[in-house]
Image (cartoon, rainbow, N blue to C red):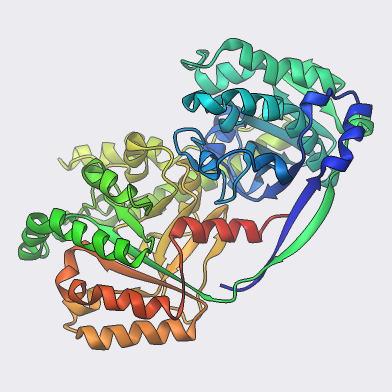
Length: 518
């Protein structure tokens, strides 16, 4: 991957008097960095659709706020990467992440979604740091509101629409406050703080902030651009862990062998990687995730979904009724296009837009009715079933390489996936951001050794040639084909490590998002 320009904004310690002069109290201030990223953020598109009827993920942005300077040095770095505390995992591998906000640009209007500070709201898990975290960052929301106003000013937006506590609880939580979250928190963040710092008008459960009228209250951050160097080639090794599921009905002998040896094989792979001190990515079939998750995560590897059950419909009727991938693409495309046309007409009539319906809804209403008439089992929504297991896992790899169409990105965003690994042997292909989703091209696959009887030596030479010719190389190693490569794995990792830097897919996606900061 190449060098890239990263854009950020800074308000350092020397600017604190400006905050005091604008009415902020001393305890509200801490030096900070601000990043504006073109991404949906955690659950962003789902709730943009639910709260504001937004049907295009490309209208979403995320603000990420970091403490800056010496203030973070008094805390252990691992505190900012504790998954139980920093629940949404929006740190991007950088310590000091304090808060986030998901934003929507709609014409000249800016809508905000949930404003979150995991480190402050969840630090009770690490009680010995609670008092100091509260003292340093407890008033994070005042800093975040200033950052939101700055975003509106820089993008020439006229109004900010911020949800009131009542509106958020009704739309976000179906009228019920989550356990462990006090109602007073919502009142302070979404009502009191907004009214304290802005001349805001209440309308239809929202706080409407006229940007021009509130411009004088803005403390403008210093905008900086830095070049991030990538002197080494990026190499990503990943494993598709499917425990024989991918070969059911096609390679029964292989499937049985993979099932019988899966646990021992996984231990051997992890042991070799631990000895090499390398982190890789494990794309795991959702239905078996809980069986293997602990052993994979304890060594710090990246985990993603490899569909929910890896089963492909092969009924002899029609592709669009029986092939899950085909019907996903077709129905999703129809759903999005219909929504777009309807909302275009409603805009002309000055009517509010309607919500985009993801494939999970349309499947049950349309596709499965047809399958019922044909005495076929219902189609499973792979995305939705994965999210029933875990909502936070960032990546996805489908069980069919031809899945990707432009439209399927909307459903990836809806179900909170940030990246998808796709087969792409195009020379020089590199990760790219499309429709708020990072597409990670996979150019090397071990299946050639099993399916085409290619020798390990020939396969390894092909992989090394690809690494030498490309700035980015992703290498797929299936748990089912370990007999072909596991005896050589330790030396293989040693060889490719000398050619570049190994990164997980989460790290690759983070870098792509950083490179698109504005």
